[in-house]
Amino acid sequence: MCMRTKDGIIFEITGHDYDTVKRFEKLHESCNYGMTGDKLEYSFVPTSLGLLTVVECSCGQKLSIGDLIGPGKKFEEKDYPPLSKWDRENKAFEDQAKAILLLKDPKLFRLTFGSEQRLDILYAYVFGVARFGDSRIRKALTYKYSTKDTSGDEKGNIDEFFRAFEQGILKEVKKYECTDEQLLKMLHPEE
Ligand SMILES: [Zn+2]
Image 1 (cartoon, protein in one colour):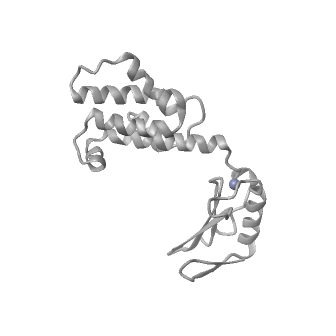
Image 2 (cartoon, helix red, strand yellow):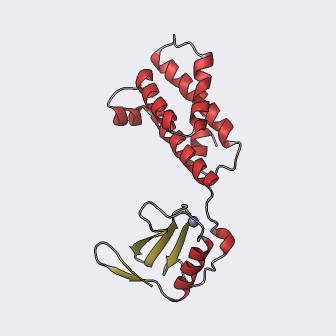
Image 3 (cartoon, rainbow, N blue to C red):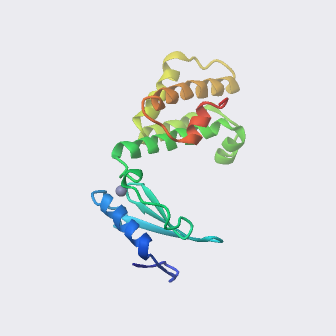
């Protein structure tokens, strides 16, 4: 099996790796086709230890093959299941939650909006994310509206916003097996 990159470089997948890709493809035969019409996307990463090839299905599942992995690694179907709609929804939810939680950092806030942290800017952004995002983001926001008067100072209000938001997100990630290390760290900074 030969693959040509847009730069005209040709990569070949043969032998054991070829068999592995075929089995991966079979396992994912009922996954939807990606935006470009290709189900599997190949990335070739040359390293000092050899070529690393990453095959990604349109469902988001990834398979690594190549010199780096070696023929010693056995492909097990159970390690590469197609990702479900539910897995993908959780991943989108986690990414949206992280995008908001990152703004807790005044420096990142400034880089993003060119302003010191301000509640009105934060709200405008967060409600934009919530409007088109996962319903769990909206749920994590309602607390604020029902309980908070915004008479405090700006910093206090922002702290209060994030405290409430984190509680809401934490409640949601406890309902499934969240494996996003970065998000879990953001929610439990002490661990
Ligand atoms: Zn798949």
